[in-house]
Image (cartoon, rainbow, N blue to C red; front, top):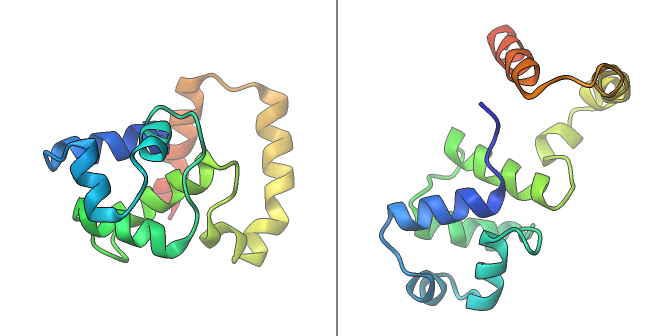
Length: 124
């Protein structure tokens, strides 16, 4: 399954907690206009750790959990950045160009990408 974009994930988690946009913004201290734009994918997610941590806390996402890692990865990807865990892994970073060239050259279908992701997960 493909990872949801940050805005979709943010909206899904906010609604799951039954928070209106205004109440969510009051609790996080974020601007309602910006949060609305995040949710609609009009602007990239904030990447400041303290902002992501405030959002996660209001949404009930535990720090260091898999859900937090997914949330943080979605934020980085929405901003066109690689997640910090990837950047910090020198061996992985050295291999990414070959991986990207291979995947780009093959023009994988969404189904093939899902299969590839599952295969990678099984190996980890």
